[in-house]
Length: 367
Image 1 (cartoon, rainbow, N blue to C red):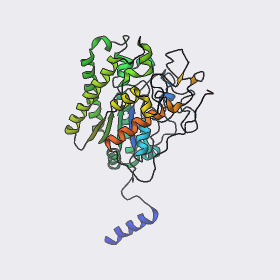
Image 2: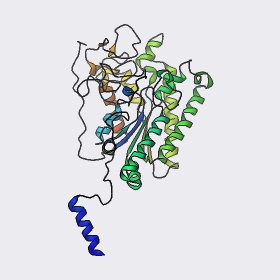
Image 3: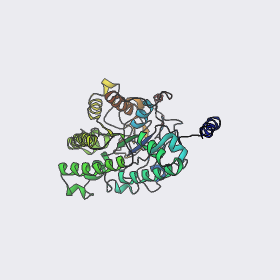
Image 4: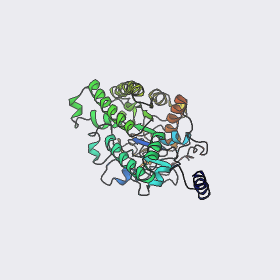
């Protein structure tokens, strides 16, 4: 009997048979909105939340639109790079296969999506967080059928998870009178509603194997160019910023509670509100020249809402905090990501892939 077992092991070594199933990599699964979307909405043909036209992506790869709502990388891109993790492709990317998932993970983030199902409904098509979790369940079935139940369980428990939503629940829901949530709740009860929903969603993810998870907090939403231009003074909207702070305080408390309740969980809350607020309030201190208007716009016609080929770009994209009316520039995202990396001391998942460098952003006055 010993001879037969030894022979089997030797044959396995010679022919490279994996005796223990999948030797899986540590990958990321990302759930989010337009701040993390890497192309899902590009494949949602009826969605009004799109980053599929120039000049989105101008400082990323070949400079063509790739589905990211920025000129370059997302915060999740940069943190993942720093940790030596592969960048997960969009769930709707036609090239997504089981092998790609095992090698890179999946990004389910969708522009216009929120914690609540009703958020962003006027964008017509978008994935809410519940929908993204449902898609993740489908991914799990695919991987189980590929590598077996035990290896799949190990793969999903060793993966890293990012949950980064919430701003649309305010900007494109609660703060817009066309949504019933705006008159059903007050500031306190709406944040409570968000936290109750998020609690159930995070418990659901834990039940699906998420053990190492980071929830991103909100930045000063009242200072995005769109909110400023809608105010009479051009200043930040104080109430919107206070809602972000309230969300972050409640979110941090929620994650602390879940960390204690959920077995074997390492759940963290990434709050970069203060550093983003500092950048917006003191742009020169961080090497920026503009923190109140978008780099990509129609000149004096505001709000521009989106960036399109007819838009004009600022002369130096690295000097602008905001890329469009809603979203930070690559350089601002890099600063935010580095602050979170410093704050949490993220460890690299491997030592083989060096972090990708910041894109070389050339001054541009021609577009």
